[in-house]
Image 1 (cartoon, rainbow, N blue to C red):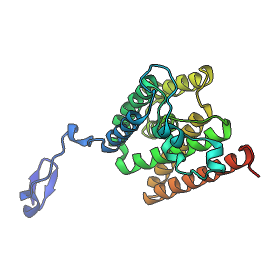
Image 2 (image 1 turned 180 degrees about the horizontal axis):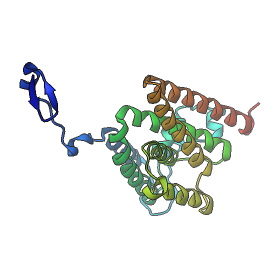
Image 3 (image 1 turned 135 degrees about the vertical axis):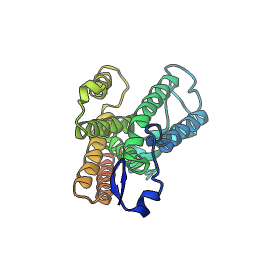
Image 4 (image 1 turned 180 degrees about the vertical axis):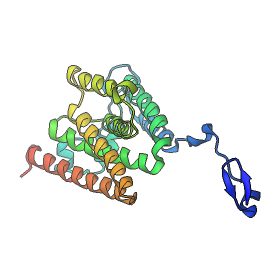
Length: 245
């Protein structure tokens, strides 16, 4: 046996080079985060009347892509569950959402992996759409539901790793944004709360799956949450859309 800095190893093992991973290399490039930001910006550029600090965009991209009860119930535009999350009203709207997406993505995606990050984002998006359709009959747009979901998942992850959610700043970020959701007119509180709950549940599901040494169960749970969110959204749209029997 050969003495090495990490204990006793056989001669063959001692001659092998062990790949050393530096701290700076642990955090992989958050490709999903950057991809989502790019898609949001590209869609924003296709809208009309959006280049204001506080305005109302218009045009076919907005009217076909927003989340609206009659469109879902009567027009069967189910794609709006997804497209609505990539449309933003103005520069302030997209700027704030993309800033939070960047911060949360840089923190969360390298920690849990791109696949899990994408699953949490998608699940939160659909849960936010469900919340929005339950809470309001007005058209809904924006990535805020998915962003709130990332905040919920980050809180779960921090808690599981023994960090204080409040001291990390995530807790206060959630509280502040919830207060703004209630205080500022025109903000979809249902989208925010639905996304927050969906993201927290998705994050918890991955943690629980890891505890059972069955990581795939986390993705199964996200799929189940997504199906439930879509079902709830359809029921909300069908029950409240004008003229729908």
